[in-house]
Image (tube, rainbow, N blue to C red):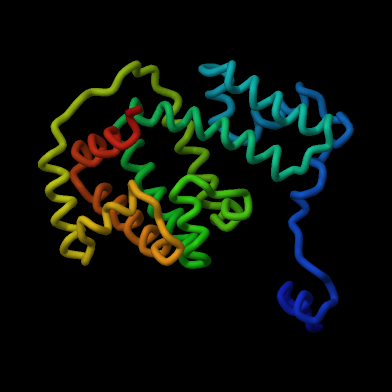
Length: 236
């Protein structure tokens, strides 16, 4: 039996568009899922939520409030998930400079794999995600296995009790990275894309450059790579 694809259905006018349902109210609308229900669900979902509940109860409580309020108000699922994800990501980014070297480098490699997965499908989406302005539509383009890998890594990042990061002179490591980027056709002008305004025509180049940069950093010896990434994520 022939089963038409989503694109065939849209082009033939059988349906007007395809939805994953996330613009509709989150499951349990009307307040049928309590705060305790969400707590139990999140604790079963991923290790990162169990670590967060133990070590960062305030942030975890805020995430529970996000799901509970969203359920009560009948908010769209995409909106609720995006708000909860933002709270988790803010905590992870704040703890990244204090993660152990191996976790930091693994984070760099995860970034490469996520950006590549987006780049293959939509270079504009890759740019939005890499530049920090990605939305739920972009996030859904990331393969499930990479999302699960991210959640596992997030638990490793937020778990340590380390209070401050060590300092290191990274001039030598940056020289290596600069030489490798130059050998791959990237100039100092290209690097300005990472800190300046990016035009629509440069978005694909921005994505390419970001992937190569993280790749070259991650290929450095562990201590050097971690020191560079730690420098990236330390608050300015």
